[in-house]
Length: 240
Ligand SMILES: Cc1cc2nc3c(=O)[nH]c(=O)nc-3n(C[C@H](O)[C@H](O)[C@H](O)COP(=O)(O)OP(=O)(O)OC[C@H]3O[C@@H](n4cnc5c(N)ncnc54)[C@H](O)[C@@H]3O)c2cc1C
Image (tube, helix red, strand yellow):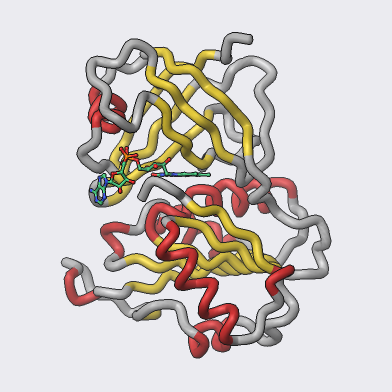
């Protein structure tokens, strides 16, 4: 069966070398916050060995009118095309996939350990939970080198200000390289940082998302504090 088509509606730079792309939501298309989509370029101007398809988390929340993907703009054929194609260009959409979605038991907090572009599914989940008033307590530890690289930072901060159940903890690992001063957390997420924001480490379900090296590092931190592997969900962005 032919895949549904979508169209590029808008693109905006949202952080250093990071763009968000808005796509038309095909009629009847439904997904759960945290899932991802495969996008295929149709008749692209150029292509490389990796081919014309990439998977991106749906960073839009399901209640939002359009689909959104955000990515670091590396110099690959796929991304050069995505960055320059005229608005309105059609792509094939194969979606939704994945089970990186919020657990049902609102009695257990959700703790997200993420960094860099790994924030994409987290934005979707956090916005949808707030919209639906699910009652989940959500804490997001969000690591970047410097604030200029942190996609959706301002938006997630606002969410933290308006939503009692949502806490954003941004941390910068190289704040000295920023043009702005930084008075928040610094350094990688570690045992000490976790204990500052989580009273009982056994209570939450933990979610790790991003490039494999980051997910592995976060998993090590959680192992070290004794988190049960059954309480851990991961979304590895293979390809980085
Ligand atoms: C479930 C899932 C969700 C994902 N969600 C997202 C998302 O929301 N946002 C997102 O950006 N990506 C996401 N990804 C990853 C995405 O699919 C791509 O693999 C990734 O963006 C890299 O694509 P690319 O075109 O830049 O590189 P590719 O052309 O795919 O790169 C091929 C290989 O070249 C190497 N390479 C290329 N450029 C560089 C470079 N500059 N530095 C180091 N190595 C390099 C890498 O080894 C890479 O494996 C997700 C992946 C999965 C599986």
